[in-house]
Each structure stands twice: as C-alpha cells, then as structure tokens.
Length: 365
Image 1 (cartoon, helix red, strand yellow):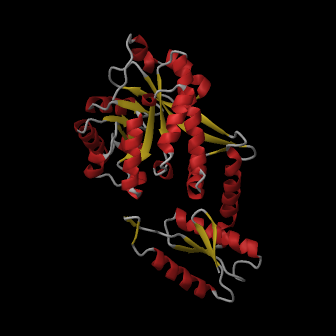
Image 2 (cartoon, rainbow, N blue to C red):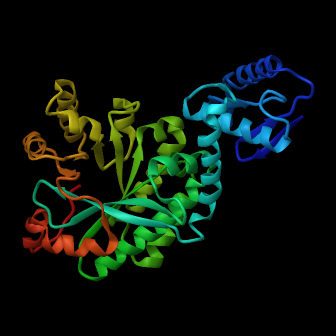
Image 3 (cartoon, rainbow, N blue to C red):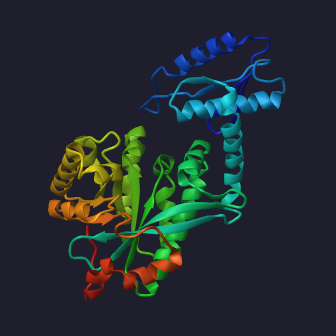
C-alpha cells in the first residue's frame, strides 16, 4: 500500500515482510526515482531519502513504527543518504525533532518568533546604514532554539515559507518605520531555496512595499548558491523579477557552493557576500586569503560590491580594507541587536560616525 502523507512525503506499507525485504524494496524505489526525467521541458533530478522501520524489530505499535520510519527518513535527509534503517540511538534526538516540528508550526501564530539585526558597515564613503535581519525562536518551554536546529526543520517540512513571509513582513515594516524616523536604514533578508522558486514571491513583496511605504531599494534579498543551482532556470526568472521590482540582490555564503562564472555573469546581482569561514581563516591560511582576494577582484570586475562576514579582529579588517572590500559585518563591528537597540547603536557607535557626518545620503551599489 502506497500513501502520500503530505508535502513530498510518502509511505509504503508492506505486510508480512522481513527487514531485508523492506530494504530491497527501498533500494528499488530509490533507483526508480533517481532515473532522470523531463517535466514540462525541464530535466529533473530526484534524490530520495528513505527511512525504514519493521515489526517486530523496531516495535509493534503501528503509530510508533510510522514515527520511527519518519525519524529514520529525516536522518537520511540530514546525512545525505539514500536509505536509513531505524536505530535505537535515534530515539532521544528523533522524538525531540518531531516535537520541535510540531511546535514550530505554531511558532508564528503564537508570536514566538523575533527578529534581531546584525549591523554591517561600509568601508568606503557612504551615508546609509545596513543591517541583516536574523530570525530567532523563543520556545515557551525549551527557551531559545538555535536557528541551526529549527531552520533545517522548517525547510524539510515546507514551513520555511510561512516563516519567510513573517520575516519579510516584519523587516519591511521595520525598515519603513526607521526611515520615517529619519534613520537611513537598509535591511538584508535571507531567502531560502523554496522561497526563491516561489512564483508568487515578487507579487507578495510588492504588496508589502506598498502597504508599509517601503522603497524596494532599501531591501536586499540574500540567496545562496545552492538555492540557485537546484533549479537555475526558475531561480533566474524570479531573480530577474525581483530585480525589476527594485530590490537589491546578494549571493550569500559565496565560495561554499557551486559557483561558476556562467552563473555570476547571468544573475542580476548587486553584491557578493564572502562566507565567514574564509574571512575568519584568511589571516592564517594562504588558501582562504587567496579566495578572498580573488573574490573581491572578480566581483569588482563584474560590477558587484563585496561584503565580508565573520570579521572579528582589526587585522582581518585592515586586510579587507587594503584589498578593497566594500563592507564588513561580524562581532568586531557589533553582535546582533534587538530592534529597540539599533537606533542607539547608530547614534553612538564609532563605526557609524562617517555616516552621521555625511550631509547627503546614497547607497553603495
């Protein structure tokens, strides 16, 4: 019996079989799904993640077996494996994971999410201010849940779209409020792979801009290389529509994915953001230093600004300035700030003094 549980998750129920039989069928299903196919003229690659649980080895209760197969499936997805069979070591983490999945679906409605803002500063002549919006989940009983735990869960369940919509609404409204108070602020917002492929994203953004009186050019959308590579055709179309809307576009975590000159040349980007792993290692590792230097040179030749994340010391800052990097963010500049702390940071931080002294305001682009 084959059933669709929801989203992209399916279950196969086999009666009177052994573990070896279940694993054999799982292998056959994986091979069948991995055959390249064409959908609406586009080549599609499918890579399944399959979890296996059998009776009596892994339990007798039907609900428990289904739950354990689900946990094994998510373990396969997390470890990028095709098939994983339930193991008792998954018990504690698996049940916690399922509980978090359930609670996460209530987080927006229960007002448990919050935005904090990571400042970044331009190294050149600039009269505007920049922050990156970061989402946090304050669980009512577990306390602060790290993004590294709940964001992958949200992406796997498809709930990331609801979270992204909430983040966009909050950040755009906040940007408009700061602007109305005379604070020339620009906000960067991270966009997940499924959000980038959402054909309705540009229209929803346009509605938010109009509702809150926020200019599109005050918002930068950050996308990862992997999000683009997953479906470059659809990603490019949406990026072009977002660019036409007036948003700034940045390629985040540059250097960690599948960068090619062909992609960089075709994408309507404004910025490249060097992954912090290279920035933090550039003073001690010649390879990281070369990647940073080459990225800055390449980006400038393509007409793009370069942002370096993970700047934590003066030596790294001075080297990035010497290499011509356009802007930096990291703990040396500031830790992430609560919404109410951003205006005072702008007024009092030595990093913002050049911007405060400017009489005319313009963006780095």
